[in-house]
Each structure stands twice: as structure tokens, then as C-alpha cells.
Length: 206
Image (tube, rainbow, N blue to C red; front, side, top):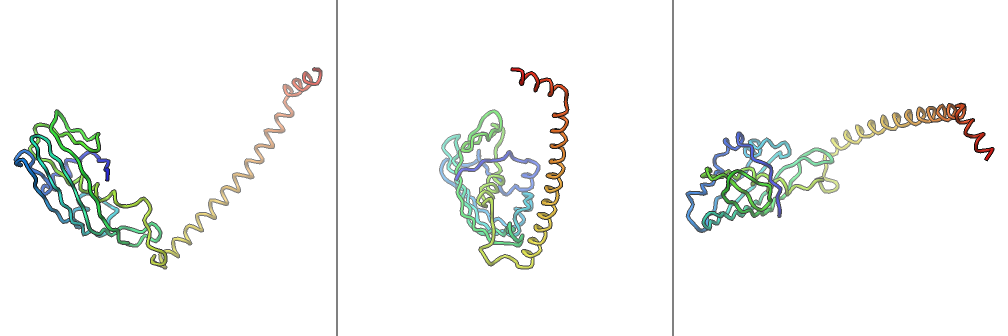
């Protein structure tokens, strides 16, 4: 799974110090860091798309000199709003993301598979990477299986959509009538224009 990362919000990540990886203090080899993501995590990440959460995440870090290979896995369940009825539905999370981290002059995440962090950084906060890994498992369209939507809410939404559709049809009809009138007026003006008559005579003489 390839994840397009957004730049870190450092003010926000200061609140999530538990996700700081002590890169420079790590010995060569493999270390694992485990996290349980509940609603507190998603609130801190200012997410409005998650209504409930129970996700376990592991960050495996393999250090080889100044190169760090990260493997992030996330499994669990999110509660997200159904696109059809807006009520909560369950979404299974099962994701994996791999990225290399190395030191450089300044922070750079333009490459999806390599992150460069400043030489002055002793640690790296992985909260945003974990968040993106989880959130990108949510499909663009997510709805309850047929028959499981909240019926009352569905009826209200359908009624609202019908009203909006009717209003749009009336506007389109008004615009169509008005457009026809303008077209006729333009056509009449065109026919009465003396320059049109002169062109017509020239054409007839030829």
C-alpha cells in the first residue's frame, strides 16, 4: 500500500509525544513499537470522519547505520458515517505501509517511500504517518449493506433530495424559457441589421 503523506503539523504533534521514535538512540537491528488507537487519537488528529475507533498499530523499525526502514501495520475497526443515511457503520482496517527514513539538510517527504529529516532531529513523530495509513483504507464511497441503513433518516434525506431536485428543475425551466426569448430577440435583431441586408444583396448579385 502506497501512502501520500501530508506535511506534519508540528504544533499538533507536540501533543502526541507517545509517537516519538528515538531514532538516534536506537541500536542497529529491529525494534517494535505498539500503539492502540482510540477516539482520543483521532480527536487529537482533528478528524471529523471517525465516530468510533479501536485499532492496533505496530511500527517496526530496522536500523542499518543512518538508514531506518519503517513498516507500519494497522488492524482494527472504525465507526464512520454512512454516505447514504449518515448513521454509523463499521469499517474494517487492515493496512501496511513501508517507508525509509534518512537524515539530510531539511525535512522532505516529496517521495512517498523516502522521508528525509533534519540532522538536528534526534526523534521522529510517526502519528501523522499512522493516521494517514489508517484513513486511506476508507473507500471514497462507503455505505451500509442494502437494507441496513436507518429507515427514518433515509426517508428524510430522500424527501430533502426530492425538494432540491424540484427546485433545480424549476430553475432550469425558467432559464430555458428566458434563453429561448433571448435567442429569438437576437435572431430578429440580426435579421433587421442593415449590414446583414447589404451582405445578403452582395451574395445575391454574385
